[in-house]
Length: 163
Image (cartoon, one colour):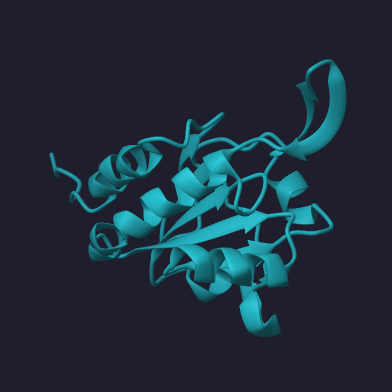
């Protein structure tokens, strides 16, 4: 597990998406900002709220030269069902071996009703076009998270003031 900070280079990855194709992070760098959100499980209440929030704001997100990538330990077949059921217009990536979740420091020990287990801590990383982490949203509350992220990415396109 790694502790990443704002300004760090985002760990590169190549993860499986629907229809069996691998999606590397480097495909988007120098072209788009990336909202990389890690979530625990397809088609569960909180994860559905979060995914549908991004779905409902996708046009405004894309207008900010940004794409959305969701990552969970679910397999591509599960992702396909989730995408179809909720008409999600972005890629969901499969991290079944937890390598990418570990690299981003979101595969953690959790505790529910006294039972300890490993799982994803709901976290969103905003990665700028240069591949650096511009923002980290930890322990995300799904309701309204899309707007919180949208507000932040709006600041990425504000030109720096020259002094």
